[in-house]
Image 1: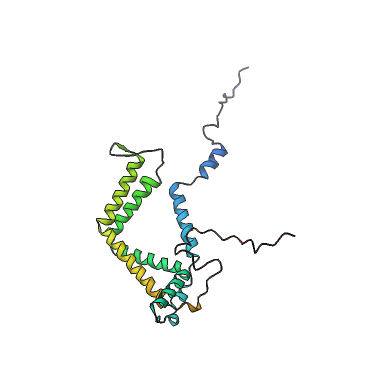
Image 2: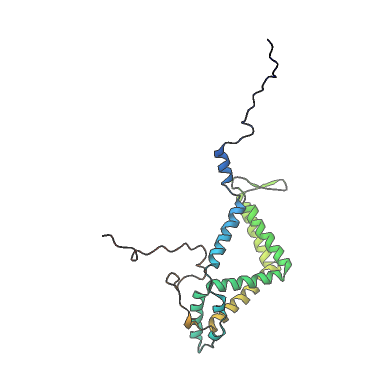
Length: 217
């Protein structure tokens, strides 16, 4: 007796499914750009979390004229240790406003930064750079970027804009540090005065000292 049911064709699921291990590996590897942005964001966020209150920085009652140059230097040293994150923010803001006031310099600087990121930092090391049908080695690419950086900074308005903005920012910080009396400022135990000016960047949490740990019985 002939069967009236149509034949059932085998269906293979290998073409439409992906092994869970491969899927997990692909999803767990973010792009290089995203990883770079996340790292910069975490660094900036960690640095800003160590900033002092701005009301304390701008306290008018704490501003007095130093009696001598040595006292001004001592004040600046103490204030730079206490307000170093705020000082870096002030210099960065002055630098940003200066670049916004000169759009041509800002565009050149952005193009230069993009060239470094996408032509050197984010490019796979085993893949040569190919431009206009010519392959460039790693050293040729690095040399071209260095020469381009020198040309942009020293032969355009970018260098003068950056130098003038940095000088204004440093002068502002020095004036504040010299005239702000640090008598009411107290450094934390994990924030010594001898720390570097940019030591807040990428500094891990300080582990408890051996003296604070309980002694074994």
